[in-house]
Length: 200
Length: 200
Image 1 (tube, rainbow over the protein chains, first blue to last red):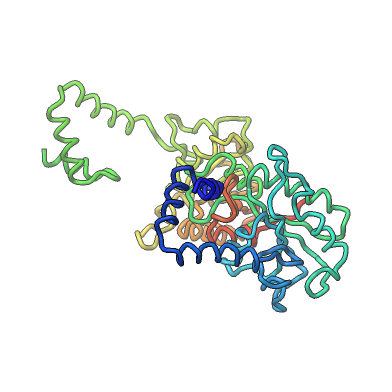
Image 2: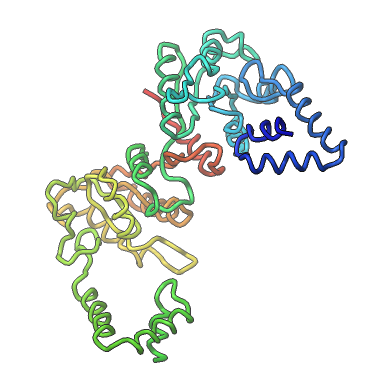
């Protein structure tokens, strides 16, 4: 029992009290229900792997995006986590492929370039044969979180790859559509002013 | 009493019940307090005027921004309301001057170009003598709210002025600094993707 509580408490957002409640539920519930949970955990660890090209979750060698011949594989969007990829896919606006870094640089947490899939990204650019259909990467879109650590990670990627013949862009910063100017903070207004565009 | 309730109820965000409570408070409170409110209302209407150049609030002919010789009067930021101007001033990033439209186009509410200070804006561009120090307007920055009506107003301003020799820009749209990509909605991500910039 104590071990199960400790395992639940290790999950993100689950405190000691919630862990105890969950463990208690498992103890009380009938055997088949509890075993189905255990099996689902084992199954997901067995079957969910990372795409060998972009590191998105997949249950095959290639993820469904890398395997899709309609996607433009010459444009690669660099994201921190699979959940960022999911948010972008949800817009239906992006037709290129991805590269999931599996985190961001964080000196405070001791996360360096070696802990991310940065080397694999550089290799995709240097050796087109590594991409799903052998395409040359023409544009890299940095789609990292607009935070201090996301910015730092983007700067690192851009400076390390600047000698390569690949165009590097990043997502726009500015006013969020539907928001109100009077409620925008200083950083948002500064970005919006600095990155202003000419109206055609 | 009925008239006072009606006057309070006319204020934005004040319903009939609140108006009754306020009116009741006035009736109960001592005479001097109630009269101070009346005088303050009269005083503000007497002393607060609109800047003759940009329509910002002022108690003089020119507002403090138009009167400041250190401001770059060749760059004019077009905002909907004085409160948007205040938000932008708070950033300390903008060194140009303003033009306050005093609202936005809203066909549903029957607000057309004639209800805004649009004609005065066009005149400032056509006749530099109307500006505070006679400067020619070189750039117009549209800083309208990133909403349907703000966009419509911006489109109208840009299309009406496009024959003039003035550069027209607008504030950037995209991810709000400090936000998280996975929580951004479809419209924000679409803007961020579409307006992406090359990393130098």
